[in-house]
Image 1 (spheres, rainbow, N blue to C red):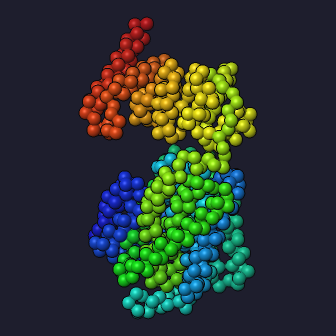
Image 2: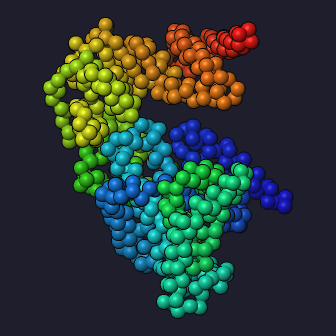
Image 3: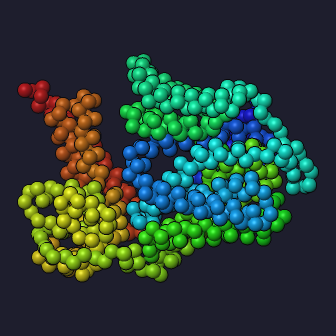
Length: 627
């Protein structure tokens, strides 16, 4: 008991230290978990391979839960709409990379089973690291970012058939040759556990397997709703969690009875429940377990990485890692060009996906356990995958350098800016969700607008709805002047890029001191920057909706509709005045928490707000009593 508690304490302690540090450095949680495992395993020796191996069976369930959640997020209709990129970009990348790796591995003398395993493992990229980095850098909506997302989504789906196909290449006579030259015979696990297909002829096993899959499909489609309604009637929140775990664990068990991958069943069940009204409830209940178990899986992988392999022949390992990244990058570059990516988008697509991925660890573990690859070779693959993931931040740094050298116009070579043939009293720069609503309201009131956006897809979508817009960079002076900046009454800055928004406001204010500028802001820091740049009215994108939600809360905890509305109104006016006052104390580049005058005045204003609201409510109660 004490040993189990010690092991658990070591795993949790290193995770809560290493993962936040990794996230703060922009390296992502996956690298943090790997670093934690490396620290307690190969570096400090606090956890041995035997302890890690015992926990691996439980940690692998995090992968099963992750695939269930991936299935929940994949609406079949959305997948059908993305079929061109999924089959084209994603399918081509997996196929070409897998075949290229297989050819290279067989060329150096390895058998077909090892070549197939390597092809599958190295065809994948790191979904966790790439998506997080693209989001943090604001690159998700670029052409390269959207293409990278499509490939990652295809790879996540492809893991399912890979896990099913991989055991077919098992070599039951495979000997596990350790690094010291000793030989360990492969173990036969066929007798372990329950099985519904053991001893059946091939056709019988196939029928039972298909029947089990069919039962899961029917159950997921028709039984989950009445069961959820039954659980809902109990009004016990913990029962939702129990049911969510039962779905995942039960389906995994049923799939294991017929010898199929548990991940395949849970992924299929997730897709069947993607359109269910209980989807979000399932996600919220499963996500914490998935996060902890998946984190434990990566820690164990890190703890089991054998760095003696690296120390014995560092040059060879380095050559494999560099060669893998170069090979994947070459294939990605050619695929990107074939699908019309150019300039920065092509380089982003190429460099962001050139590493191996976290699902490679899953395939390596499966391939080793199923005797597809020997143990010593699996150790080398684990090291190569981990090192390639650790290099990912460097690949994005290389992209940043290339992006600056290419310049701003590289991504728009495919589409030249439109000739603007009309002007209006209102110019709207940016036609995302925020800009669309502003545009609809203003045009519905009978005023002409001139819409500018550098996203060609958004402009084309608007045109299909009969709304005219112009493609081009709104921050370019020639675009603004062509749109009628000299005579416009209002400029609406609704761009996603905070830096570009500030530049646009600064330029417009210099050109037209009398122009009224309405700008969108994400947070208070951007509000202050936009005020400093010269914006007149600044709208925080979540502020008004949050106020309305707060009013609904007040109405349901005891205040009347009038009292809640007055409290909302008071808060709105006080916060608007407070922001204007705090803007005078704010210093660009200095965190608010390190600006004493700002912090002191912010606390004082918060106290003033509370005093105002309490006094207002007391006064209204007194008026009600007197009436």
